[in-house]
Image (cartoon, rainbow, N blue to C red; front, side, top):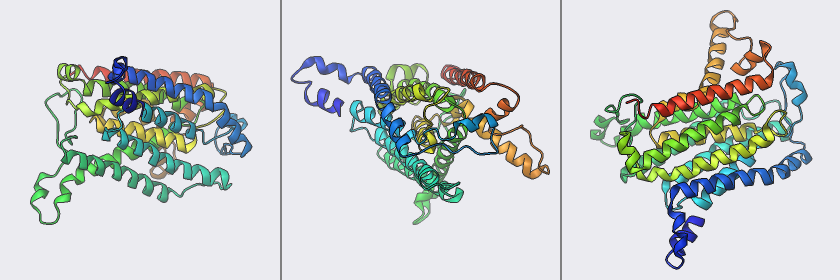
Length: 378
């Protein structure tokens, strides 16, 4: 909105407004705007959540040290979503379709998390949405994102060719071209791409959700992952950097740098209140929205295969749950970890919560830095 007003409309009459055309300038201001929004309205959100008695429910089978967190205001992800989307609308180019695809994804997955939190906390039920309902709505949201990208590909604004780390010449096309000759079944051409996007987005959202179990853990890892995505989106859309690094050059996706910058700022602002001991928790509304945003940006810039490194801790947390459940069912109730997700395992080993958080942040940073080094290791 400000980009449209100050640059596109007022720049011809007041030339200093040309500064608003620069992506780096708008990204910095989007990040600062998101940070200030989170810091200033954070206390108000916390107060209102307390007034409505929207407090965290802590499972009895979880670590005993977490029982004191019961009643801490949750659903703070609403604050994160507002702090991301408002600066994005203000500072990004409103004519860019990728901005709106990412905004939709964030809102859609955030709405699923909101419904789940609302049923659990406000309706006072032990479970929110059923697992089947939750997965259905996640799958539908992810499919809509994929279909919107397919439509954009028909206008030559998006490519379904995937980037492969370490191999600059390998860019497989996620399409079944043979299906184009089938009468009335031409849509099957894009079925592999749609299925892959659904897998990536559902995996990303649930991985962030599983990581959200300690004060500041998930949001701290999100700051690092969003920072890495900010760099990746910028270089993917920059003509010089994209050519130098031999990346697929996608000029229009560069505008997502503003969105990623806003995600960094909003996450830092939320961490101010979520740091140990937490005054507020993000809830599913926050974790699903952030996971959807991270996954969608990775898909748009065609760096899905880097997600295991961009969000390395998220992946390890999800894998720990999958391995624990698989071992319990297939090995006669034998467990691999003392408790899953992985951060609880280290708590059971005697690590203090703050130590687990700090070391997981370090791990997330190492993963993200490695992801960025792959840009040159081709």
